[in-house]
Length: 281
Image 1: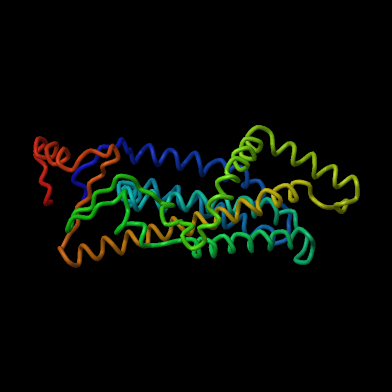
Image 2 (image 1 turned 90 degrees about the vertical axis):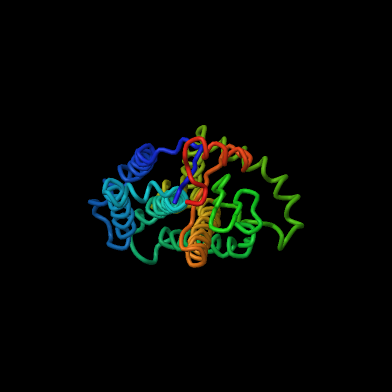
């Protein structure tokens, strides 16, 4: 039960954002649903569109609004959902150009899935569940009371197992920023141009789809990273549910304080007292 919150979270605004985020990939994929392509090329498209439609319908039902009001639960699941939609969109943009199960494009599709799975396994390797709640600077637990200063979905990730990677990754961070800026300011057009040049120079087969090559090139590193982040997000959700269940089992119920502005606990108690709230539920 939430007894205090100082953020401006609005469930209806979150629902609207989900409609926008979901609507764009759905509209981009919808024409392919009715395309004359092999069944193995369409199955992911059908799955992706069906998932989006199901989620949008659910969010406009009473249980969906109840779900949105649970901040930790809804934010973690919807974050994972957005990343999964992006994963499926990239997979679709590659496999839709496959003519049979043994052509190069289908093999690129398989490599994308392998990259995604490797990302999940990497997330498992570079994670520490102890960082989430018991030793977290963003979550304070006082008997049956949980104070949340930040919903840190990626807080489980750590380089503790391989600390020697910290320095090169920090140096590599600037390269990531440059690549991100490039993609956001016309990198897709540059990629298409490179793929088209390779096709004309016979490096790529004449019947090879330029769009499939582009999405494959972008998708390999992107799906790897998304695999890591999805693992972290779902682990956060799993550990959160375990925490709540353990508190409910011991104390009968739990209370939640959302303290995103990092006020002192004494100040929060004063505000709750002034508003007539009971810190003990």
